[in-house]
Length: 340
Image (cartoon, rainbow, N blue to C red; front, side):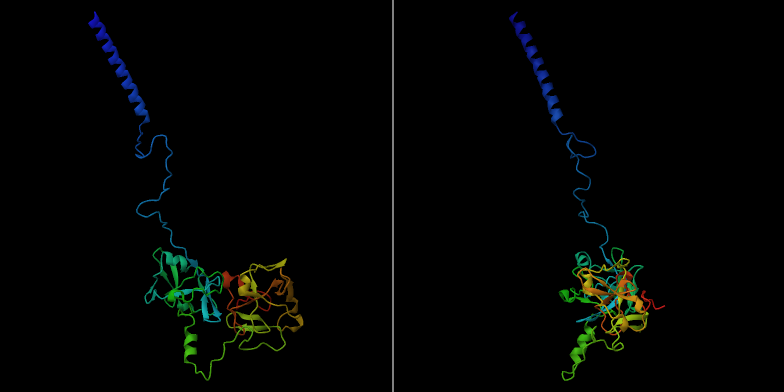
């Protein structure tokens, strides 16, 4: 009887052990990772990582977009005090060449970080030869990213990221390999340097005419007159022979100037004149306006008039067509000079 009792107890204990093991197995199963076919590293119930959040192997997450260039626009020539004729883009910024490039055949050796500091001048449908630029000197190359880069005399052309305003030449001589472009693709300042080196000390070369000392003179006592430009036709010039310009962003009604800050470093407000001291222009077109700083500025045909700091000689019109044709020389009727 006792033996039967012990056998029954043993059976009960065995059954209880089996039940306990089954319970523990269920608990472990619910706490174990759940592996899905879509992501074998993702724990069940966890928030999936966003696609592409950590980049991709093989390309380091780098962008495949082409390096950003700067549209060349309408090219013009600016006379720099130190460098002489300098090629500028449609916004008036200096264009440069790189000694490590080649002109024959034309090829660029500036890419990656170099092209960030020196953005290529992009040749597109808006690219054209403006005042002082020979279109025969212009060409293009296709860069590795497929973009078209302007060449001048075979040399690829660039802007400099540190040039903050039109007319800046901060890239001149950088690294001993970067130089402002002359209109024919040579290094700006080369001709002037050679001339000064060969000049006799006893007979120094005469200084180049400046805006206040033009090579010719307008009629004496006349504050505004008309000069016949070879490309633009009749244009207005001041008492020193400097061309007068309009800015496309200014307004006539109400009369307002939108050239401020850095703009005024390149474009000087023309001073008012005596309407009785003009020649070849209807006096009714001549007026003046007061600027926000209290100074007075000449107006022509109810629009503010300016002088371009890059003009050096009598009748120069190097500013015409700059910034995508926003700056235009003024004809005797007070309208943009077109040569037609």
